[in-house]
Length: 86
Image 1 (tube, rainbow, N blue to C red):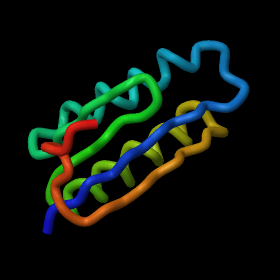
Image 2: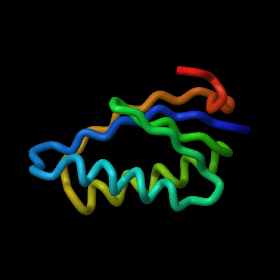
Image 3: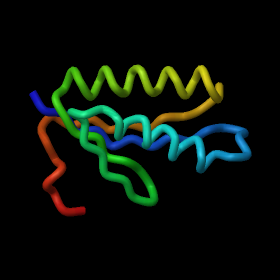
């Protein structure tokens, strides 16, 4: 089953928040079976359900371990929405 996730990361009380967001995106790009698109407001992550969820679980935990307080805003929809124009 395919899954599409729109995700935004908001590090709290961090001076270099843009770098932390880009680090998160770059780590997700290293997963070979996960596709990611980005824009100025969010990222969209696509792939097989369990692979996407495992990736996000690991990378979100890493954000909390490395920078502490952060907010993630996520929307999940079944299916591969990567081909839908914005």
